[in-house]
Image (cartoon, helix red, strand yellow):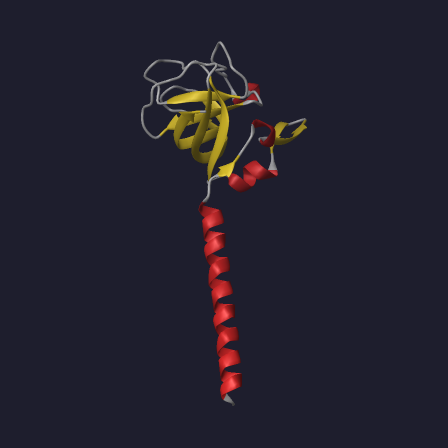
Length: 155
């Protein structure tokens, strides 16, 4: 092998290695980023059995996501959770069963206590997406969609 062949081979190998490593880092960075979700993304269909979660929600379950909406008035002042709604609400949309679950709310369980905001103030919430019927053992609150270990900020 000549010196020219070796240097061409070395440059090609180096370039291929750099591209492979760069693609891997880009994939990890994109994967670590927080996915955005909108209320229009929550459900994909309505069937005789009720609302069906969208493919996006199914794919993002267990992942860190962010969503914007409005804080419904909490059930009690010291609650560690609240309901995020698509539109401002004067009353908390508390549901007695998951069959009554509205399609424009999501329950938010905070990772720490935060001061509640006015119901007409838009907020952005970031947390881990959880789906499926679940009853809060402390309050009896029934939910279909939840954000766990969440935080919010006004926008």
